[in-house]
Image (tube, rainbow, N blue to C red):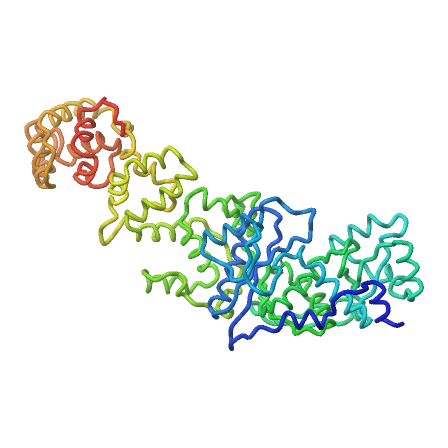
Length: 547
Ligand code: GLU
């Protein structure tokens, strides 16, 4: 069989593989420098597992001063979701994972190894399929045009479920005249790999995370080019990774099973095998205590939109994922509280081999620490940014009351041991609700109501807006003592019956009036932020407080 002639018949007048390789020369990389890629299919919103993969890919490139590519794998036209790539690019941008080479849906592009969108690369797939045909390593399969079988085969082509080769034996053995006849009759053809596998061979390959893997070698004549001229993932990603000079293929571990097929194709093409890094899936402990894959259907936190909507700082998600990648991050963070996560360098050997288990409580804890380290000004900026998208009224309030809001966010913050209660921006309005709207006296016990009213009316009459904490407390004590409260706690403890209560009780009443709660930050600080007018309004009670 004259394979060259066959190749020419199938793909007349196209650029040669050799010329393409000249146009995409090997990258001039320094020792250790890695080229990685994130290759999403635009089929929906971003799952945290995809983000995890993109993040690992990004870090492996950046930690080696290498190159991070984003490639759009849009050859499966039927599964495409409008706008998905915009979301993916935006997500990467929000988290600061800027790619070095890419093409965005709006046409913005960077890098000289493109196009970076698979649907713009059909020629490359044809050229290299032709090369394989010319070398007798692939063949045209006209099965799709056979009566009755078209649908079954189409399904196989798209799902890549190939049965044994006997199905295509006929096409494997067509001679040039048959092919010519079929082409003249306008029959469509797919290109299949002519595997050397018989089903008995084993293959070994190294995964950089999991180590050496042994598996059955490929024995299927998989589809390299579909009859519509598009290449399925199996072939397209190999050509792209090679032409783009990718050194480490970071992808989900679900691709381990098809790696033997990919390796046979790579070997037949005569390409250098890339390194593989199959990143682990993220798991979760379900309600029944069993481990299961984290899924968008059951776990809101599996969808990256969750973090934006709830208002988690981007650092939280990043730092949590770094924890999942390498438990050493936590220790490093403890020793380097001020450093950016970017300074935590890890290599491929530092990626955990254990299946990472997602734990929202742990993520929230990380977030609390991150937020506790921010200045009030920073919190204001972040909350405002979040509120603009998610709580317009609150955003308006924040814009009108910048100084006041910043002071509120500074409560319990500007000290060596800031509180660690807040883990997302969506909780901040409720957390400080008494600073943003009039509180309700929900926590006032019925049996205290009379005493509360008596104390508050006496306090309101004598109230002087305090100039210092001491002045404030002296004023409270004066009022309390006059009403029969103990100002000396020892005396009170020795004989509680003799008093209406102690100063702690008096403070509790003021606290209730100001915040509606029995626990609150320092009252003097709250009064200073609320200001004289609002403080007095709350002490007198009844009047609505509006900003
Ligand atoms: N487009 C494939 C996916 O989204 C990417 C696989 C790969 O990274 O090679 O699953």
